[in-house]
Length: 139
Image 1 (spheres, rainbow, N blue to C red):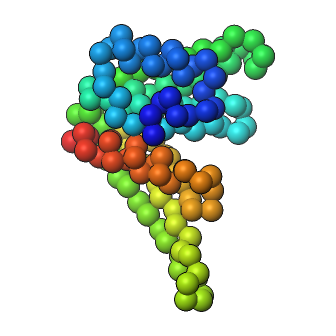
Image 2 (image 1 turned 60 degrees about the vertical axis):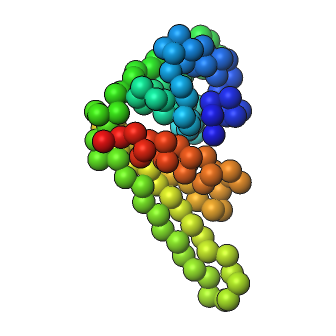
Image 3 (image 1 turned 45 degrees about the vertical axis):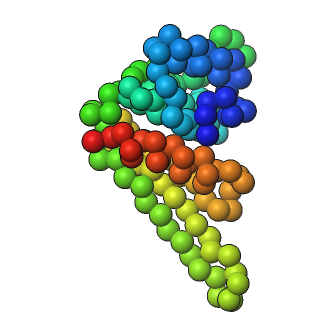
């Protein structure tokens, strides 16, 4: 999925897209997670020049106030211990669909993304598209 396909970004989506243009970076795939405890959003964008890692959340204690988008670009050569893991549980009956889960994990920067077949409909598709882009470029 590309950054424009994520619905939970609000005004940050346009700013990330503008910054990609300013960097002259080609977007390969993006992944977005929301922390349900504090509402902070983590945005990862795999690009041809590296991995953009953003945190988007309230600038202060008031979630209704101003929000801050803080990002950094990690060159692909600096991404460490990137791995894709999967688990699948087969049902008792023939024809039962398997329950699948996927995790993309990295030590540097610290990444732990997951998706399961019993979650949001496009969650696995989004995670695997992002994982493919990262794995193709990380050393």
